[in-house]
Amino acid sequence: MSEAAAPQLRRTLTLWDLVFYGMVLIQPTAPMGIYGVVSQRAQGHVVLTILIGMAAMLLTARSYGRMARVYPSAGSAYAYVSKGIHPALGYVTGWSMVMDYILNPTICAILCTKLTMVYAPWLWRPAGILLFAILFTALNLRGIKASARTNEVICIGLGVVVLIFLGAAVRHLLGASPSAAELTRPFYDPATFSWGLVLGGTSVACLTYIGFDGISTLSEEVENPRRNIMLATMLTCLLIGVLAALQVYAAQLVWGSWTGFPDVDTAFVQVAGKAGGPAVLGIVNVALLIATIGSGTGAHLGAARLLYGMGRSQALPPRFFGAVDPRTRIPRNNVLFVGGLAFLGGLLLTFELGAELLNFGAFIAFMGVNLATFAHYWAKRHERNLANFVLPLAGFAVCLGLWLYLSPLAKWAGAAWLLVGIVYGAIKTRGFTGDLVSFDAPPEESQAARPLK
Image (cartoon, rainbow, N blue to C red; front, side):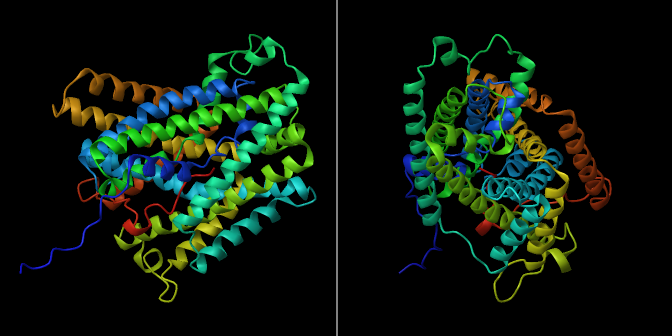
């Protein structure tokens, strides 16, 4: 008898398994948290921003799927750019990813505080941010980690909440009988339309879709990965885009304006209250709070794991960042460190600025993956055809355009982060002559961090 082969992952996941997994990562309530910010930024054209963002993400999703064909064991923008173009550009992509990982728990703490203040307006904002930063830290110090089954149940529950809101909105609108002009205003309002405003809003609205890239990490467990990874990634973006467009369309019709929100960060909750009264307001508010606590806890652990990976590879001081608690198997120092950053960040940042900074890093990653796809398939002559020429470059151009429409403050802050990273990289590699820093999170925890929903 021949020697037993080493165990390998089984290819059991179907196309629709992947799509559902993508929906779990992104969550059906994705646009609710940013509705008010985007509404004010785009002066009412929220539906249009969601649809433009969907087009950009579909192009980028295709590029992720194409790169997953070539590097099925990678699954991150850092890896795709490093392997597809050059390690130096991969380094820039990876450094921008570090900012995203660290910002996730920060903006989750901010939003959780705002959602709590809907019922407790007397809550002092710094106290709320401290409370949730401590909560995320404590849950992760105990080694608590939501299972995939729990995340699926939460996703289904949030889907039910979306249906409850849409039902209440339809009932409200049937009584209000909106005019034809009111029905089209969420797409185009001649009184306020401006491409600059719409694209500025879209640069924030793309937060709705962030997380779809996690599908590519399952390449080694998928039936026919060359076909299904790309299809699932694009289908997930399409389904989330349609569902998000329905939610924000109904919300704007119910509210009737893009102004007058008591708090722009919890605008969707107030819309739910107008549509269905205190009961629907409470359901939506609690659902968003639960979802955001889950996102914050997972993002917190993901950031700690990424820092652990950097410490383990000597990119950060290993005695602190590379240490693991022997009992819980958790990088305790990093969990505490990220908790402190979440608190400080929550005091210094607004929800809108935090979301824009997160998108600053995400757009850099998306541009990198689109360019890596073009470089591999067209420039390196692996599969030259019109689609592999036009679509990756179109994805790059759209993401670049949206990146340019981020607020000046977000671009300056993001540029400062990149500058620090470049200086750090130059010192660490003696002028980029040595091995570059690796931004690979430990494989078993690569999905711990999912962006805010």
